[in-house]
Image (cartoon, rainbow, N blue to C red; front, side, top):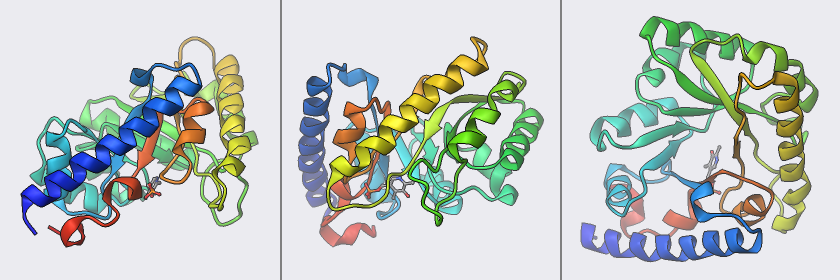
Length: 240
Ligand SMILES: *Cc1c(COP(=O)(O)O)cnc(C)c1O
């Protein structure tokens, strides 16, 4: 397996994915530039991730903080790293030094701990509140009611900019079954924006993965998190 083979594979996968993203945008009357593809690189090594950046995908996501740190060391500094999985509080410091956006803020304690560390580091950080919109008991995230109860606090955060909401739909055979979950996340965002006021700008919705990103785009996703559709079957298993 050579990097040329990996490049060819990823060029082809990206083109096919891009075609589907564009079609979903067209169907729903949205501009392609209003939807950001976050390539979730958790199943591949730094070589494949680097090739993807050379093909123009600069928004990369990881679900585990340690893996994000590891890849960030060897990838170009232009990459915008997105943490899409759970963040333990003892990993905030190192993660904040690397990441552009944290999609997975799932508790008030975590939100406050990120605010404190961002103040120490003298930086601002964009985050999303993870919502358990599908109400599965095995999932992390705020309930819709708890999300709304945060509205008044958002404008008081000085270093953390809450930019919107993130969710994962239940895994189903039929992606249209995810539609109510995505529609609910958008409605919840709209209500939260009304209650939070103009000092915060909740313009981001992170929803949609390989199985359901087209439905998510139709329901207003601004960030889609895609791994499998890009990397499944990659030459060499993607370990390089
Ligand atoms: C792995 C992962 C993705 C990507 O999922 P695919 O189905 O492989 O596209 C998206 N979001 C989160 C939080 C993930 O952990």
